[in-house]
Image (cartoon, rainbow, N blue to C red; front, side):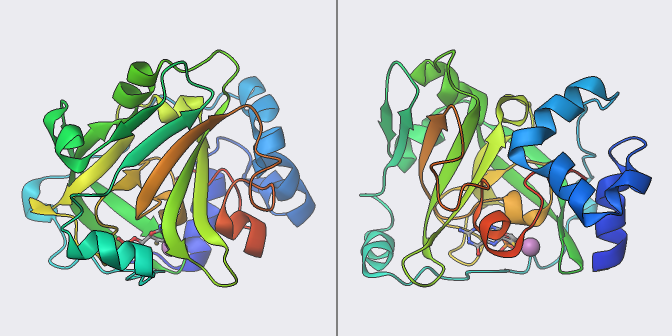
Length: 248
Ligand SMILES: Nc1nc2c(c(=O)[nH]1)N[C@H]1C(S)=C(S)[C@@H](COP(=O)(O)O)O[C@H]1N2
Ligand SMILES: [Mo]
């Protein structure tokens, strides 16, 4: 199914039960969908955040999962990791955790996996169905012993979006512990390609494409998003005013 930017944006608001009419005003959108206010509002609404995103059959997988945004980080540091087949790459788990972790790809691959065939919807007007395999984020957060003071998980990426600003994203703990939220190292039974985010990317299946951070280097548990980047919780949220909560 091809989704236009308009149907997606309307769909994103409509999915949040009953807020479509409110969502039409930019000021109200900003108020509702920013990281600061989303919680207060969502808690009072009837929204169910623990529902599963639709999963598809193997024969529904798209022949090509196109790449969008950065298709190769191309920095000296990333190129060195790529040349070494990511043997020297580590995922750091830091911030408000009792036990910070530093995990190799081999260690991540050895953890229990989840596989899911889901549809990725980009605001630019395209969708693709892919089969992802990865480690539930919950497994890592439990392993690192997340502190009670943590409210958000921030994802740090290897690509520079210009002027030394790296791509980054963030989600709250409801999405972080959602069973379909995984750190994926394989797409369609192949190791993740550079174009699709090698060696590891986030899949947070109830949200739009720009939340699916590629080229992960670190995840950090924080109490507030204010001191990170421009303070809005993600590169496109800071730079282009995209909603922090991009529910579908
Ligand atoms: N690090 C990083 N993650 C990113 C992006 C990016 O440019 N850099 N683009 C986002 C956008 S807008 C989309 S639609 C998806 C695209 O994922 P794909 O390249 O696997 O299709 O990645 C998201 N995650
Ligand atoms: Mo996107």
